[in-house]
Image (tube, rainbow, N blue to C red; front, side, top):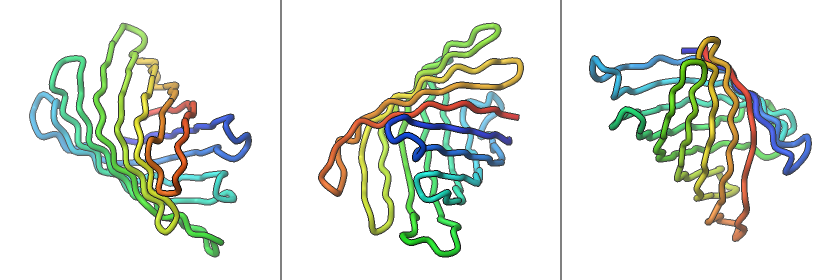
Length: 171
């Protein structure tokens, strides 16, 4: 699998622009494809970190427990690749998600609810919930997403709404 993704948020104009490009492999656990493990690595650019670049190795476990419902466990590390970062941004993310999909002939609608934990080494830990809406065009595999969430715990004592929108393509 290969995909590319670009997202942005107007919460901090010009600062939360991110682009990801990656490749990976899906290991099916059964012949139906209802259970699988995906190993993937992304290369990411992030305007928040002074045009920083990151490696993002990922592991995704998928279990489609009903035709329209899928359970995911997703984890990734983010590894700062800047030569001389003022404050290295290394850390990791893990989340549990349930996805509800509605496939149509030309598009697929997907609603995903995530409970997540994020740690940025020596900076912050965050626990929150995110709802992602995704619309995919079946024929050419372009998609658009929107994320809306709330961080109900942050180690710096703040809570906040989080959101972004994005577009991408799978190959």
